[in-house]
Image (cartoon, helix red, strand yellow):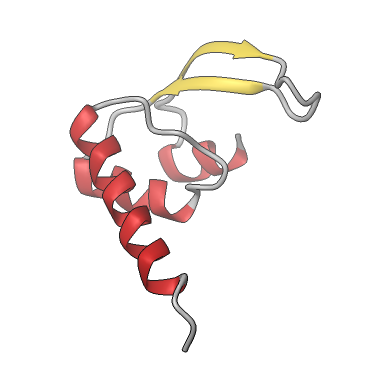
Length: 77
């Protein structure tokens, strides 16, 4: 949650909170408003901690970027 507050300030809205299935930190659904590019940069930075739910175009771009990175880094050098 600190990363959300640090990046978006107090302009976020917590839509839901539930305990994670593995008993770790609670899972929050948070709504923020920002530019598409800023959200992409933020999502890339925290992709292992967050999941973009919408817009679909941003979710797809992040998915494509992760696939390209996997393809690049799964090869032995």
